[in-house]
Image (cartoon, rainbow, N blue to C red; front, side, top):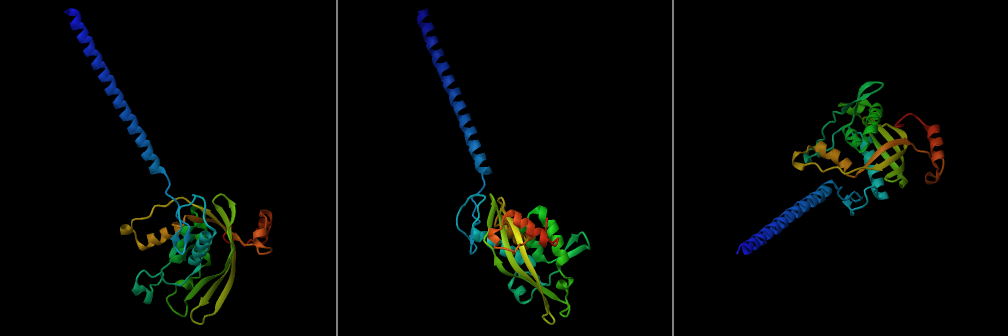
Length: 275
């Protein structure tokens, strides 16, 4: 009888032990699954979103590699940025139908310059400058401020002046490194006196170095000002200009070697926009 009771106790103990081990194993498996799932979610949160910046007529054409951009997208970015930078109308870009018929005067934005203290740049130039790399932007804006005539901000018609960048050609981008391109631009900066339409034409032939940049989250529409939206529109292409040099026109642009470009840049160096 005693042996029978001992056997029953051993059997019950074995069942309880097996149940405890199985329960512990199941809990351990659940914990491991939670850890694995957490790691997967973290990887998803850190993953860069697909790059949809290949803009043709303002529409994305599909996801691409983080460092790749189409030649058309790069040329369009350069044209848009430089046109916005050097079109000085003396008025703010319209944000409503009323402002189209009655444009608001541009008060300008003060920028520090190394020579003349603080000078004004147009609001459109300041907004467009966010398409330029941060380390280059400050010096570039200073150079723009020194170029911008005070008459651009004049309220009297007999003093007012406007300017426009007329782009004649934008060369196809030449890849110089992964995610980096050199783009040549041939243009004229035309400044006009409004009272008599007298013009001053300055050749503006530049070599622009462009690179792909990382993702920038879209601002909340409800909480964003028109100025913030305009600034974001310059970053939405996921490109930025990080250097501007004088363009060498002594030979066929695409056939020049890096050494020839350096020699040409040294011969034509004017100090403007050269890092």
